[in-house]
Image (tube, rainbow, N blue to C red; front, side, top):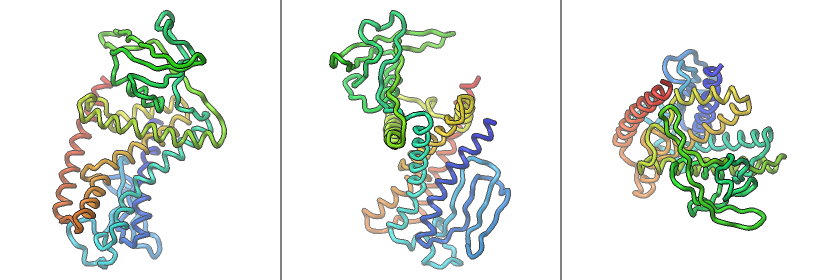
Length: 342
């Protein structure tokens, strides 16, 4: 069942992403050779009447693509020039490329709205709802709201959790608010040694104010999207500066484990995971990495600045190198995921 759930989740997310590219390519009048779900050997294909596009389902449910005329170095003389991507306006090319990202973001917001309706809409503001006996009970109380950590205002609970993880083992300087007003407190970490694995805890648990209804769910969908998006920015920044290692990233094996855990927790957790992974896919494709949508957008921005197109052969060579490096990175991350299971 975990494998089936994973295939369905990735299938939905990839379909939405590629459908965004496909829809805007068709709108711009770009010739689309193939719309494919999955990679590897083709399982089956079909064509619609009066439509040049070949629709395919391939064996490996790990991706998909929309193949458009004008993406490659070689010019297909069988396709009219006005139907090739290079012949389109800058805005048409930009919208076609960024559409996949935007569709992923829209999907995640819709999913978070559904989760808010079913589970209740968390207000994403951290309250202390649990204190371990004898741990920090002299400085904080149940019901206190955390409004700042280490001098930084707490915008969302997700960002607070990430900040605590990044500073694990260090004292936490919190600003809390309750009926008596605001005050600054310090929570000291407690070392936990389990079979030689050292970790730290602070002896408190976090809760939140949950509301029900359509309007709170709409608010939750956008606040959850914003908090996770900001969290991803911080993760990328900390990967770059070395505060986080590659071991903190997950590939297909890691996703498989998360899907299994979510399935055991209930169907709504699977639904939430669709929104979470869709947001991740959109965010990663927004980064200016060659071979990804963000890399192609970067070349479009360069084209806009210099007033002429970047040499197609140069751009495609850079994308090819970027793709090879991404595959190497995926192998390393997958190897780390397997080591975590041992």
